[in-house]
Image 1 (tube, rainbow, N blue to C red):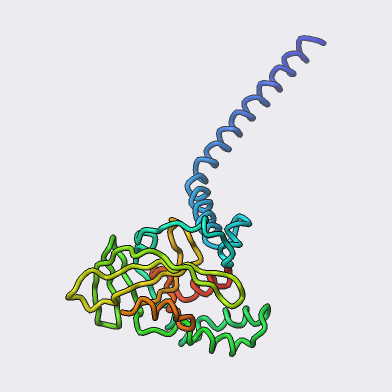
Image 2 (image 1 turned 90 degrees about the horizontal axis):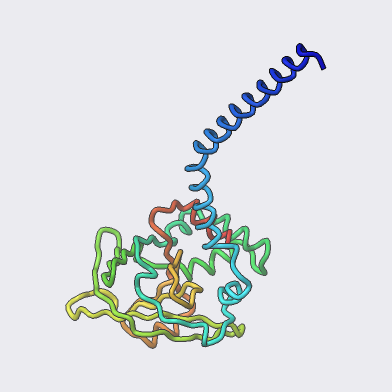
Length: 236
């Protein structure tokens, strides 16, 4: 190879090397810019999967009500901390109609029959609940009552289909408060885990509440829209 061709070959290699280095720097810069969005997206997906899918086979069975007594654990009131809204207004205004239509596609009732069933289930005049430490505030429109609650154990219920549920019970400790004497949480979770939505039975008779199976006021986080709640329900 002549010196001329050696120089040309060396120059080509150098040009290729410099171009590769520049491209690597561009790729690294693009990756750095994309990192915040990517991490946020992964975090949101993780939260969604935790709430709905990607459950282990055992967790899926527990969610359906099939579990051993040894699977049950005590739960602190902090599992339900937050600001919660009733889904009942969204049933009344038609936002949840698509949920009942979806259920009718897979179930044995019509969409209208499902809506009637859930109308009885979701019915409540307590449209918002705030839970902060052991303090619980029940809102009815512009009126509210507040009580301080302590854990009062759990009860296991067995249903006609053979599956079971766990009610986590909290007792009101303020003698002068008009807040319900008892709250009973049911959310398909039976160990110390944060709740994403729940059914709440509340009143002054602990035993009578345990016998209530038709009316189960249901609450989701107050920062969700009705459309988002409907999507969450369909995802379940």
